[in-house]
Length: 621
Image 1 (tube, rainbow, N blue to C red):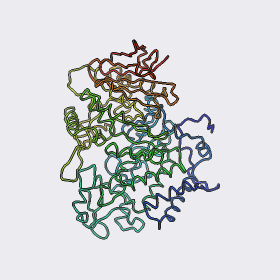
Image 2: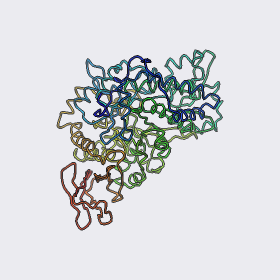
Image 3: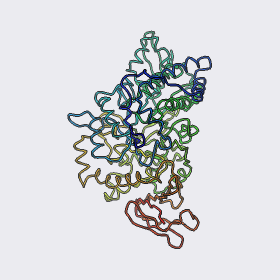
Image 4: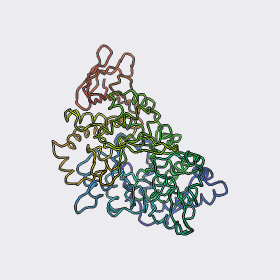
């Protein structure tokens, strides 16, 4: 392996042996890292258990190390965590079975479409592809197998050969149909304390029950019969998703093993799903507890020790300040955090034609560190959450979002507030339908421009952009799926036939083709300019309520790009006073998307920005 020329796109699945190789020296952990790990284990399990716990962690790390091929070990010496993510990164989010084809597994169909018809993503996030019993993959029955209805581990390895991969680590809970839970119900001693059990639902006093933060309205304690009688179990999300008990160190050890198993199977990024609720403590909110952050930091230590090329992203659907707390100090927790506030703010901006709230929030988005950044996504398999913007948008602002989404044919999912009331949790709608109302009297061109303008925000902000498959395709609401399944989230999970998709992409009159003609050049231009590197400087301008404007400056200060988005259906003047901003005193501003060139006059850069127009202007002398 020529480590001097290797790309970031490592095929981890091919760089690990199928069998361990112990015919070499065992892994040694340096004293500094050993101390960090032990400190976290003491916080979680106490001083009396630290030696036993550390010895087991070390055993797991050495086991993983034995699978690593020499060329991977050599390559890791040259890995630069500052460039874990670059301007070339874009993450496509998809279920493994959203694209189907006769004669091929869905994963093979997905690989074929991505390789031959998409050239946008560098990374593919395959949503949970394990055997499951409900919640479209998030009630995992077996963490170590691929759902045979989707494909095989070999399909995953083949996809890893072309793209970096993100795997879901659904560690908060497990399916009630899983072997783990059934063995617990059988009172198998190996699974003692794997789950959180009560003899009666009244064991949690009502006032303490009301303190618990949850994203659902279902009962938090669900009844199951065990070999020793009826018991009640902590179920944050649903009766079929039984919470694991991380107070038992054996649960932690199992999850560390699975985390590293995913690395061996091709995971470049590990997505910690619903990690917010990982640790349970009656008398608290049981959300975002110190122990939860400690476990995430421990996972980071584990990967730094034996899989430094693999990163962690936390999916914590909570208000913005709580959310970004999962960066830790910028170097000790998640390398990437879902930017949950972005989507509702962008939607609010385009609904009102007023960018003020988005601008004010974005002006306070600080660079985290050289090794950590934001994941800027708009749509997802679930919908548009409003939780991340609760500190930024008022109740009346969120009510506006609700009303507008409903008028666009969307649905609303609610959460239990713990006091007998509920509040909006997420907006269930496709991004295209959220941005464009069916029946509105306007041209297709303006609909496409509005859609692309909204998506451009995620491309220009500091971080890595994410794109759900149906957001890339411009899919409309799938009402049939909702009526058939009675599940609101299925409005944005339409399964597509591969041949019909390809035909649509090649049809010049189709919505999918038209959107790709707008979006694809933007994605390519972004990937070719260092000013869009996640570590590049960001200056968000307050120029007009009708415009969103941000300047990105490359780390070496050699490249400056001014990005302007008109969030309205009217033409507006953009004006930048060069006299007061000497660092922007350039002779020309070259528009990258259209090739036009603009020059300041009398110390001011003035541009008329057309309805929903996107301008990316590169400065030149």
